[in-house]
Length: 220
Image 1 (cartoon, rainbow, N blue to C red):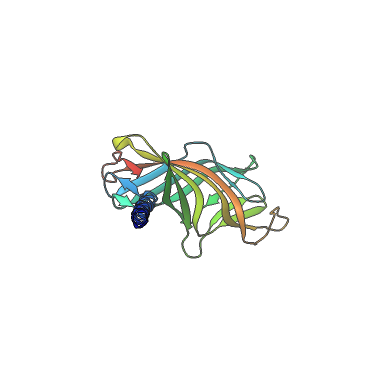
Image 2 (tube, rainbow, N blue to C red; image 1 turned 120 degrees about the vertical axis):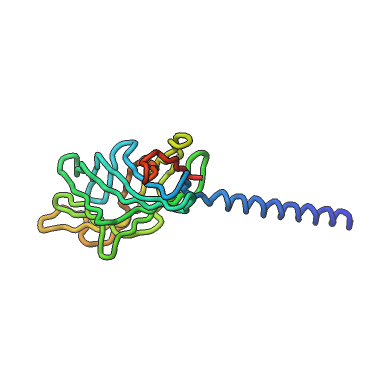
C-alpha cells in the first residue's frame, strides 16, 4: 500500500513539474519581438493587398494609398511605432475624402504566434488635443487615442537582408465620433461610439538610414 502511495506521489510530482515546464514554454512562446539586423533602422510601409477601408455606422471610406514611416531603435524591441498617411480616399466610391492624421501614430505589438503568423494588436497615440479627422461630405468622423485594439496579423517574408513584415489589419471595435454639420448625414452626432471596422494592409521594410541599403527586419 505504502509502495503504491509513494509511486503515486512521485507520479504527481512529475506531472506538476511537466505542467510547470509547459506553462513556462507557453509563456515564453507568447512573447515576441520586432528584430532588425542593425540599429537604428528606418521603417517604411505601403499597401500590399488592396485598399484601406474605414467603415463607421454612416458608410465606408476607401483609400487607394496608405504609407507609413517610423524608426526602430534597438535590434530587438517589443513594439514599433509608425506614422500613417492616407491619400486618394473616397466615400461611397464617389466623393473625395481627405484624412488628416495630425501627428497621430500607430504602435504595433506582436502578440502570440500561430503557425507562421503572429496575432497582435495596435494602439493609436495622438498628440495632446489632436485626433484623426476623416472629412466625408456631410459627416466628419474623428478617431482619437486608444490602446490595444486587436485584429492585426504579422507575417515574416523574404530572407536575409530582404526580410520584411506584412501587417494585415481587421479591426472591428474601433472607437470614433461623428460630427454632423447643418443638414449632415451622420448616423450619430458627437456621440462616442465603438464598433467601426478598419481593414487594411501594409508591407513594412527596413533600411539603414545612413546608406539607405535594405536591412532585414522580422518578428521572432
